[in-house]
Length: 81
Image (cartoon, rainbow, N blue to C red):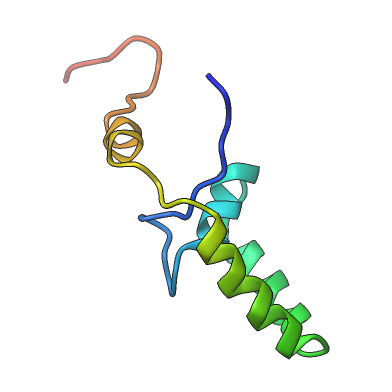
């Protein structure tokens, strides 16, 4: 299956752009948000425009992907106590 960039529904603060980028890169969303904040200081106007343009261009995560991620179980033997 092809890996695609979506706006996140789970890791959303405003529009899910940073959360979606973090899921795509398989890193913690907090790291992406911190990078965004540090870049916001010198490039605030351009970054605001880029964020909202990204929110318009990047599609929102489909419902079936969200449900599939919730049903992931760890691999390996399951021990019942």
